[in-house]
Length: 159
Image (cartoon, rainbow, N blue to C red; front, side, top):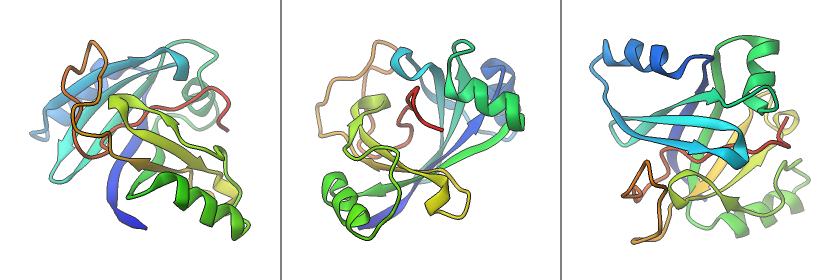
């Protein structure tokens, strides 16, 4: 079911400033993607076989903007890579887990993503992601999609 920690999402009001703080640690930006449907600009910084996903809201309607207004900058979610997103969601739903997304949807880099509600995970927003197939189309800002799930995007209806 779970293969690895894909990434940790960190909400920030100023993406460029946040990127600089991680560059001081020796990390470099692998990709930047604007996810208009999700209301975020995302920067991916690879850390071994995982990543840090920095999330900046595009406007006040973004769920990341609401997160920042209520909690301030910091860890937003934990993303776990799965082999088969749809079967994982079916299994979790059958076990009574509260899902934000009952079916997978496209995230950054062409990955399939879905969220588990924090009420079912001890207060932690958990993202499940399935890697994009080899050769999947990517956005204009990230021309080559990674073959693992470093940075799936968010969506406006998420808590």
